[in-house]
Amino acid sequence: MKKYLIIGSSAAGLTAANNLAINNPDSQVICLSAQNNLPYNKCLLTDFVTGKKNLNDLFLPISEKVKIVCDRAISLDVKSSTVQTKTSVFEYDKLLIATGSSTYVPDFYKNILHCKNVFLFNSLDDAINLKNHFQNFSSSNVVVIGGGITGLEIANVLRQKNFNVTIIEKNQIVRLLHEKLAAKLKSILNDARIKILEDTQIQDFVINNDYLKKIILNNEILNIDILILTTGTKPNTQWLENSPIQLQNGYVVTDSNLKTSIENIFAAGDCALVNNMINNEKIINNLWPDAVKQGFVASNNMLEKNTIYPGIFPNIVTNLNSKEITISGMCDNSKKFIELNSKDNYQAFFANQNDVVTGYFSVGNNQKNIAKVRDLILQQKENWQELC
Image (cartoon, rainbow, N blue to C red; front, top):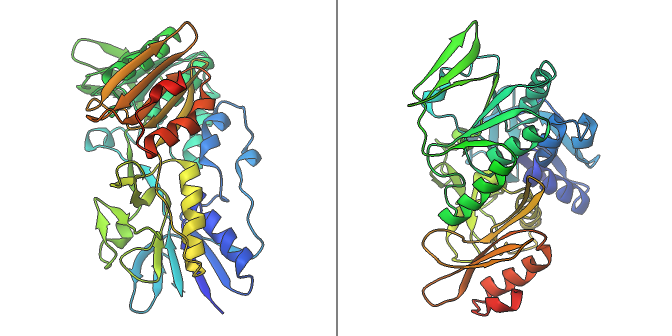
């Protein structure tokens, strides 16, 4: 009997486990989860906090052939094909590493993590803690540290619930985005009366009775009821550091089959480095749909179906202040920039030195353009005008 072991039970891990169970029902499929919850959809955590979704709406379907074990992997022995956990040892014939990522907390903020009104936002436990705290406040001063997409989305939904929201970012919001587009997002959030402090360094904190009360900036002091840290992510791969698995900045390096440097071990999801379809460079992935695809491809290859993962096409669709935002491809300051502006629609195209389209950004209902944009970028075409 084949023994399949999956470390991680989120998008990539659970997709792989279900696929293995369906296609090899006589095998043993064990899915290890470091969390004590049933597998859940992380994309719905914000809706859960704001009351749009109930707890049961978050849980994901699990094949009856899949055994979920709540235990944390602590080491890997490739010679004996075993994984040591906190409580046991698991054998495998094929292994999938899908341990995801967790919030990266810079050292500067570690001395406030004990405060009862300071929260992370990466897991269901984080969301439950935050929701329970919100129930004690009808109108509060919320500070979000970190101006990435996650920070902007959290700030947006909390403002809709009538919280007073400030975003503090030490650089520019959405740091890798072209500065003009970052300014566009800032304007949209300002229209929602979300205060944004860019290029801002926090000097100190005032704590009283295990509650964070004030944030001291260079020229301002902020009163605070709730602080949420969205300061980036780090891969959950510390348990692999003494193994022969090839890591790069903590992420598991994979090939086009999502195989690692060890023959019978695969990786997928937030902890894996995969190909960027645009430039074929290795990049990290934090998007749920891509993790699902990777879990499917990796498990197919565990079943020896020789399935190629084409790579990630970077694409983010979100909603800020009731405006749909689309970011596709590569939209950074190194590219040529073309703007098209109308009353209800804003579009921007990016091109390299050969005028080949590399990225697309829009505000408004432009979902119909995403497939066309993808084709333009991947086929290295110049005729962005056909999207106008």
